Length: 289
Image (cartoon, rainbow, N blue to C red):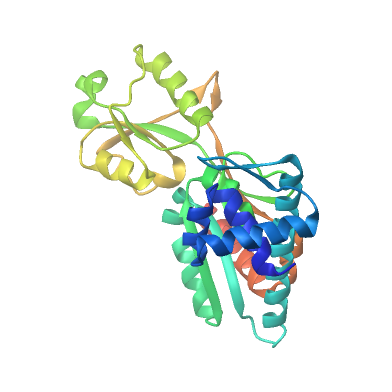
């Protein structure tokens, strides 16, 4: 089996069609079909059931796919070790980061890191924590919010309290102002709904929904409505202009934790361990300000 064969299996599992897999890998569809048949002969099992609409992974196929992911991960680790062996910190550093951390803590960290280690190639994906967690095999390290990742090492970076925020000039019409909601996991949103219903004595209804917390904050600053934001996003708000009400649920603060998650084997890579040190140092410095 070649590395490209493992990559093909993972792509087929993700795209669920021969055509889409061929497009992503820049090869012809007949070539994909032939390679898949060869791979199935190699393992002696049917990996996918072909239907008119999509490919369905068999039970044995799921085992092969998991094996393929492991092999690709080992290959990437080996390649990075070879590159790191030249002496200086180099190679590739792949990071998956939640949007909120990507907009606040990460820019300063990357600025320091790239200045100190200019030979490292950064591959960065910023998105929802749920998306980053779902694709954890794609990254050396992840910075995610909410729950820890199972079967990985998780370093606790910080906790954020939450605040209900509104313009003081509009306090008299508070219940009429639209609530601005940023995209987050359902459990988190339900906690916000619970607080809003209890403290505002009316049903929660987010009339404005955005995908990024930064957009949510920008709309708040423009006087469009009210919202609930994590502490990391409110440190620069003018408290003469905005009212900040701490969000408590059943007398306990609504807390959102941030974790640095990775496989401990990644610490063997100098570019990874160096980044982790700078990140932790930056977080510690921020918490003392």
